[in-house]
Length: 348
Image 1 (cartoon, rainbow, N blue to C red):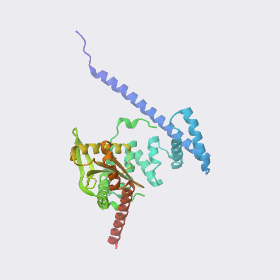
Image 2 (image 1 turned 60 degrees about the horizontal axis):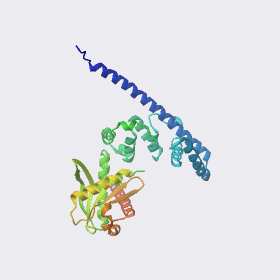
Image 3 (image 1 turned 135 degrees about the vertical axis):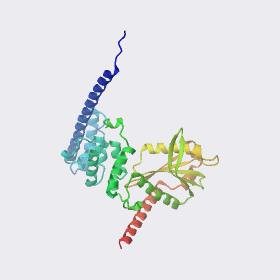
Image 4 (image 1 turned 45 degrees about the vertical axis):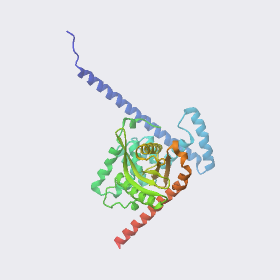
């Protein structure tokens, strides 16, 4: 009689071997990361000390090192990356304060955070909460520090946990890779400052200033859903421009503008144009508006195949990037002053 094998022992051996390999890979990655971070810090120190206060020599030194190091060690040592290493040392001048739990990609984000107190906060939080690089990036650009300070005690855990739902870790996250003013948002002082609340408040102001811009804007919808093969996509704001005779879609980004944001807007413009427009409408226009700490960036998207039909009208009738930026900044300033005046009135 043929002997039947019980698969359970095989599975147990496989799981044990798999655990051994994963543990070894994690240790190897951690060791490589520690060595890489330490080396980049040391390179930054040497460049900083060699340059001193000689700006012209520093420029020459960067070019010289970039050329020699790239020729010998390959990619990763262009002038921009060498500048990052220098900036890394300047942001974290004491080597003993570096955390082995954080990767070079973490530090690339952290060294751009202004203010030592804010930077130290994000370092501690990234270590304690075990944030991936994507989670840290989201928290920085969703004003996590400011929101946590403004949130009442019983809501802090909710604010801390939201990133786990918004940016769940993936296997790829383990691979080695080379003053905000919130008063104008009119958020209740006792509210939990979730990222969705922040975006909602910004959208309220965005709708107001676009309506004030005039130039033919007529408000149509907010968070309008469009479908594609069972998947749902939501457009923050939809206007109809009765001079251009076309729809204008607005996508608001509370963080920095990423290349994929432009691609997604192009997709939504084409889908909206196919599903929602009438034959006598001109091609739909999309605007990606990014409102972050120091700038307001607007990028336009127009269907390429019909772009030439009304290009001149488009330029003349729609607000320019500069106008949109100025309008957003002005709206924020006025709303901030209004909030300050309200607080003064209440205290008086």
